[in-house]
Length: 285
Ligand code: ADE
Ligand code: ZN
Ligand code: ZN
Image (cartoon, rainbow, N blue to C red):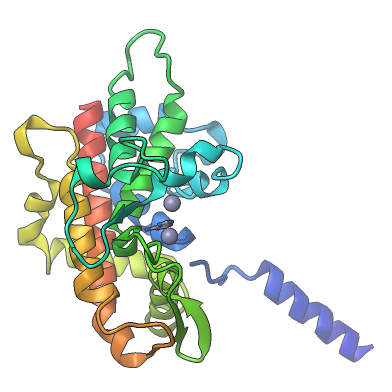
């Protein structure tokens, strides 16, 4: 009886515990969207509140993983989460690389950011032909994806999805290490598995350590509302310099990789959040 009661308590803890570990998996998107939310202008806050469904209660971050959940229902949307560039070139060109596997131009994460930005510019006009709620959720999600270095990766390994490694003692693919594992390990080791604590730490770095870079992150050339070609070019460079660097099939990635890549992950999460806010402020401004 005592054993059964302990078992029930354990199950309760496992399934109801608020300290769940989520993983540019869920946590990466939550973090970029939360950082963005804290930097929105009043006009952008009003527009976001108006576009979000009531059950979101004004919290954009709570729905930023929605596009990952509809990949299968909206089959057309799955190539919009990434860009495949030529192996080992470490450069990105819109005309060369932004297409899906059938070669349809513009069907990549950079093209999607452009497209949903254009749609959202119809906000406030009468009878937009677009679903602007979905446009907001797609744009917010894709701004996160494009800042995950391996979402702008090489073609043959599908952004690290076919590179099998060990993350400490566990098997993983390199892509998943960058979507989830680095963030999860950081949360566990340094932030009591609490994503809010990590968000606070990144926000503190934005106002202190990276303060003199922030304006450059926000800037966009020639009065553009968004600059996905800049984000993608930085992405493939970070993929080459940090994600792929020193990794081959079977590599064991542990403390040295974790400690040296963690600042890059935090920096890209910060850039994604700052830029999502800057883009929404320009769109709804
Ligand atoms: N599928 C093919 N390439 C990919 C990438 N770079 N990221 C995520 N999924 C992919
Ligand atoms: Zn995605
Ligand atoms: Zn991914």
